[in-house]
Image (cartoon, rainbow, N blue to C red):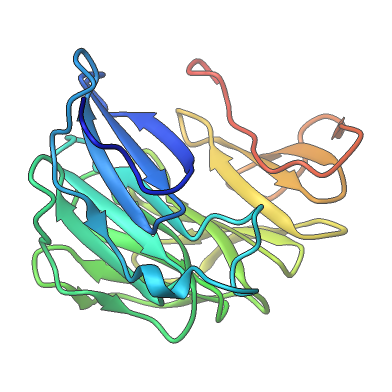
Length: 240
């Protein structure tokens, strides 16, 4: 049988065409597998494993996150080692040099056209990178505290971020200007996601609530979705 990860897996997702699976583990590596056979499709896409030690990463944290590009040809990874990277999905070959940050990189996401990668960092800054060149491009976007997630709108014209400062925010990708009001919460916002048409946003908060907002204005839509404990994840159904 194919050798798997060296430590526990923290996430798994299908490729856009459903033919492959991308896994991430606490060994600070990501891998792509053939869904039908369970055989590896790539070499391990590995970040520095030596940083995943001691008190730096708690057992509830994810030292590495990863995602496919929309066409499934590339993988972006974001690591506690202070780098993000872009890889060829089916070989594990680096497409860019390490995209260096001053602190833990919590999230990396491709633009819909695959030309940009947005990264979210513990320093409170969201950065845009040119995939072809592996260099910074465009504006930077700032929160007051650690940024947990970033994603592009379906048309790539806007970014959505969620941070430890209790705010989620929609931004113009091209200019860096804030779109609408800050989506204010009482505690840390663990993540935020667009609906499939880009018109709405859902947020997940440590205060035990998920909320839906109008993306263009920041106005809330409906009441809070209340849970008994903190919420780490929320997303829309495909039809929104």
